[in-house]
Length: 486
Image 1 (cartoon, rainbow, N blue to C red):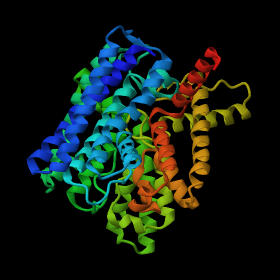
Image 2: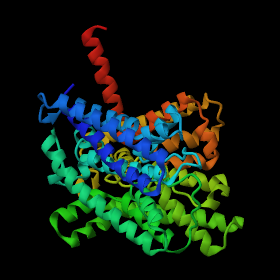
Image 3: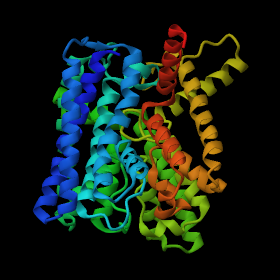
Image 4: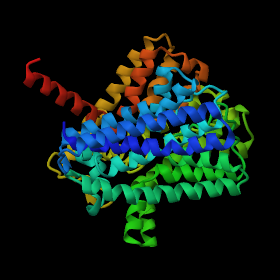
């Protein structure tokens, strides 16, 4: 294995350890002795592991990662972060080993499954929000450095500007990018905290709400009761939209120090398509809610808009009354989650750019059928999409839905009915964890068999690194076994 992978893993573990100092200090300040001890032990274990990995790597590592090494790092980093991030849950006694890991990986992949018990203290809940925030940052970092080198052919590299594209995955590029992204990500999070605070939330609630909306994690606390009214809901919608749009365009605007560059966000066709989908689905759901007598006209529109934006950005944060909606409304929200946000965002799902290319490719094929000698070029935002990208997006589309179908079969073996199985599978692959609560409660999720949770954990990682990167790792491992003739 490339020792640079060990170095990067050591840094990730140290980052996780450093962030755990915040809930550790909070525990000490408020006198939570049990959780303070859990965080102290977790910080020490993660610190030793991180230093050990970095020490092993510095004996001699290359300055760049190969495609296979990059794919391996993409997959392994989520599992390693989740192991060390789940230590406080297990040591504190809130969750067993399997549940602690499951809850931790759902946070770091910004899936946000509600698995913590109701009696968890505020320090543990704060760490849950922080781990979702860290997971969102890792998504952005990997999206702009490692992912284009391993699967940029599926649309990621096409969206990036020239100075952000990456062929070789180098340590220098990762170092430079991580600092810039951290500044932007922290500034946006701080702005969210201040807005929530000005809206009347306590500082603790403002911090948690900002962390879970900016990261698209979507889960604050198991019994959080969110009302879609007032400025808090408006702030949540703005935060979720900001995270669901192409954040790499924000970076480009800041990098060029041109405020007018932010206009490129609206000129981007993905953003306009996302806005159109939100308006369309909001109108459908609001009309149905009003006709069914759930709300009056104003509340029907506000509730529909809030949840369409939430699931369209795969945040999944839900208001209290949403659990009683009809299945047809939940189905439309599930469709929004499957589509997902923009390709340069933290959100999951298939992504709008890929759907856009597929639709234009289908129309092009219709034209070629009618006019066999016609030369048709597919363009997005004035740029021609290479045929290689089109072909591989078609393959990605096939593997994406094959993964969902196989997952439906596997998860159904646990005894869940078809609705519940669909909720669990699509929630994991699209990083919309609260979707599991459509037909299950937190207790039922916690009592799922351990093998289902392990499979769901794998689905969450696949949803972040994409299925082709996962298959690339499997293919590389299989070739390695064959070369050794095992």
